[in-house]
Length: 235
Image (cartoon, rainbow, N blue to C red; front, side):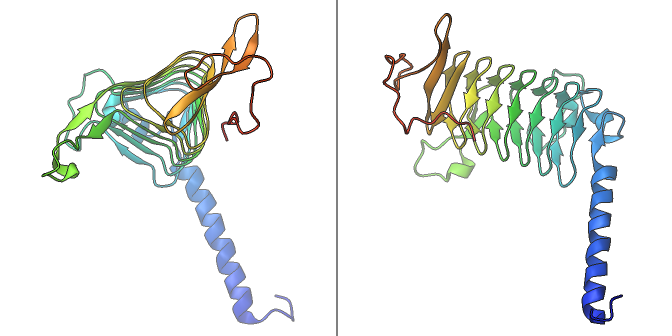
């Protein structure tokens, strides 16, 4: 201890070092790998895949499958089915492909079917669900009204930007970029960039032409029509 460091300050620094060491060790030990005991409860948990500590919330593991070399960040929520016991032996409700990297705070809540293709990545705090509450009856609380399910499919080689939301009934094609903060619903074709709430196509790839800007309906713009505020960066 330095002669110029008060004992209380030295003790605080030492305690901080101990807490940091313990946290880093907990991260290593509590990360779920394909050989972990928890991994055996999944429908499939691919080789070299990991779910990162801490506080991953998992429900319905027997109906969740994860491909090989996938990485799911900390504070994730993976939920398959209702909060009641699920029968084993049925097809998975959640499928995450090979080499998917899903960032911190990813939320996947599925009751019917959510499928994510190979090599798709997501930024932090992306939310994907196949269920919405009903709201049509104004005399009943929304929380007590019957829900509506519609499967979600996200193609291979996509990028879902920070904080984006994928709503029930959405089909996203291959090699699609979803800009940060976007809310996506409906059918999104291959090879495009979508942005906004609700999300719309802002760029798309055309064979023999390349990437072009589009109008709100997805129609390609003429050369030079792109505006400076057109969102194209997924964030």
